[in-house]
Length: 167
Image (cartoon, rainbow, N blue to C red):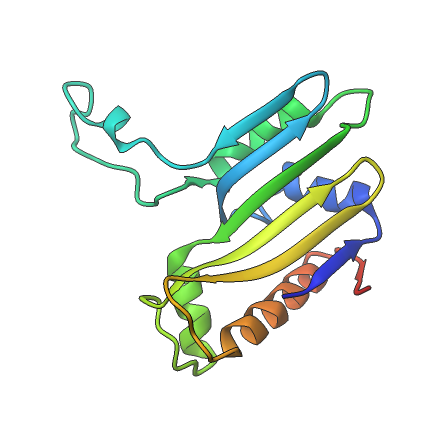
């Protein structure tokens, strides 16, 4: 687990809300505080997609909403002349990418053990911080997934020209 303090908020927000850079993630939850506090539970309600209206019988592929589908909603809540008082986003790397990341790095931990690679994005009104975490279904003494995830996120930020510092 690492905390990345984002140096250039405007560039980060442009990548987060104005590009597809973060589309490798699912939105687990969001809390955005502007003139109201808006809460979004990113968990998909599969019941919504069943019944007479689902002619093709297609259900959402993930437990949580894809960031690419939620990005514009979050942008609408955040944009404006005034800076938000704060927000928190909890993003999960898509499962197929998490599996590939574990496999590519030769980890003995399987996707059955890993619940999610998590990226917590927090803005408190002055500072923007991204905190990595790994969530498991059960206790795992192997810390290699944490190291793999931290290395991936550092590479992700570098690739997307997001400047950060590690406190």
